[in-house]
Every structure is written in structure tokens, then in C-alpha cells.
Length: 386
Image (cartoon, rainbow, N blue to C red; front, side, top):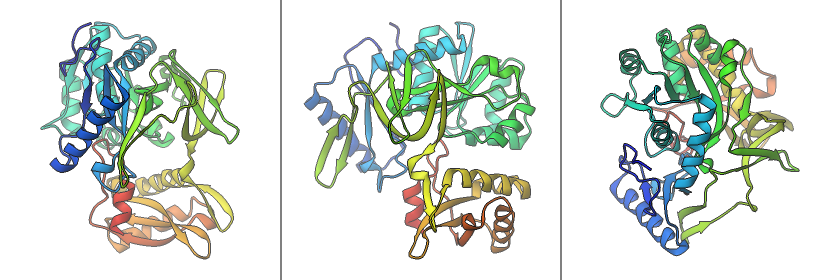
């Protein structure tokens, strides 16, 4: 088996540790030592260490690492290539970091299919104009993006190049309103569901879904299966499932395998109908306000719609968080980098879309909203700013 652009032989017993090079040197070294220690203790060979998003970690050094076998990446890439009908004639654009399963997965898919990979970051950073320039110039056919990047394309009003066959969208749920706007511009979006623990996507909209403009259902890929447990949480199994977790804790190095046999219980609620996966949201997004249940992820989507109606450039400057309340149990707060006047307009527009108990009860102004390389909000860091 040939090497990827990263110089990795996928058939070797060599382990690889993929970490964010921008992390503080001390944190980077602690995580590297963590991986080296655990792979030695567990006798792991031919594995790749990748960090979870880190959005709940107090510091980078406390980020949870996931060990995935190279065979898991090959299984995932094989299934994705089959789903996308990828061949050696395809050209991938690469804008996802190699130290995330999405970015690394593209390299493996291309290696297996013989496709070409074209880097499309500008000075190692996402730049929507440069990305579009590369798409057109290189006649790219496939790509993988996160919702934030799709938003940037839509905000710029860019129309999809004719050469582009499909864009897998992962790293977070894709808002239906954003999907509609992107499809109107011709972007061939395939919403997906996956996680670091499964070496990328395990369910993706079909290529046939692009024949319609309706928001598509996502289908389990050939290497994976899913079911729900008695509490409504999704359980997944796949040839690409991870080996174990590892984490630096106050009690020292910890490593464990949370799977039950070949099944892994996720933090997501949902249902499985045939091969169709219906994800309703993460368990931590479900809260009760004064005894009434609601989904914070849904409220954030409604906020995004409200803000987009007022000024699309504001969307990345605001978010919602649930905060503890002595009276209500939980309540909704607005986090914003904008002016008080803008926040007032946003709160009014948002309130028109939600039930009374879901309204914003307090606003916080911050200098910035911390995000990961993939545009995910780092929630623990954000709450530390409050």
C-alpha cells in the first residue's frame, strides 16, 4: 500500500500521533507523552492518535485522545469512496487539518482511489476566496467542509463550479436554511454524521439526493450500522471503530475502552429506520427551563436564522448558552461581540421565533468567541470568559 501525502505507510505497524502544531509546546508534549505511554502499555501497533474536538477540556493538555487503527481508516475510506463513486479521475480539495479525522481521511481516500489532493488553505488558514479560486483553477470534483465554511461560501454568493460533484459536510449539523441557500447557488452538499471515534463519517446523504433540492436524509455507509438503546441514544458499530481513549487527568494518565463488545454508545439521541439515520441532537443540548424541555442546538439554529435576517455578517459573532438558574433550573443567555443596540435587535428577532420560556434572559458581551480550527465553538473556553 502506498504512502499518503503525510508519508504514512498504512500497512505498517508504526504508530502515528497527530496533534495540533499550534498548541502550546508544553501541552503538545504532554499529549505526545500520553499517547506514547498508552500505546506502550496497551501494546498498540499500526494506530493513529487523534484528539477529540477539545471543546469541553479546561486546557489543551487535558484533551481526550482517540486511538484508531490504520485498518479503521482504510475501512472508512473504502466505504466513503464507494458511496461517492470516487475514482482516480477525481480531484479532492483539502482544507481540513490533517490532525482531524476529516482531513486525514481525505488523504487515505485519495490514496486508495488514486485521486489527486489539492491543498486549498492560504498560509495554513481557511480563506473562502482562495478556496474558491483553487476549486475553479484545479477543476476539483470532491471536497469536505464544515458548516462554517459552507456559510462563508453562501455569504460571498459564490456559485458552485461545474466540475464539483459533491461536498461532504460534517463536523456539526448543517442548518436546513443554510442548506437551502447553498443548494440554490448550486453547491452539491451531502450532509453527514460521524465522529472521531469512527474515523470520520458513518452516514451520508446519497449522490441521488442532489437530484432534489429538499433537505436529504442520511444513509448508513456500507461499513457501519446503528441502533438506539433503551434511553434513545444512538449506538454505532463499524469496521472503523476506535480502539480506546486516553487522557491526562488530575489523577494521572488514564486510558479506557468504553465500547460494549463491538458497539459504542454515543452522546447523540436519534433513531434508525432501515439504513436511514435520524439524529435529533446531543444529550447535553437537552435542558429543562421551568420544567419545560428544549433543545439548545435547535435554539442556536433559530438564533442563526434571526441574525441572518438582520445582518449575515453578525452570524459568527453571536451564540447562545444555557446557564444555571435557581428559579428555572436553566435559562438561555446571549453571548455576543456586538453592540448593545445590535444585541437588542437580535433578541427581539429571536424572541419572535421561540416560545416564551426559551427567550434570552441575559446578554454577555465578549471580545471574541473562541473557536477551533474547524470553526467549532470551544464551549469551556467561552464559559471561562463569562
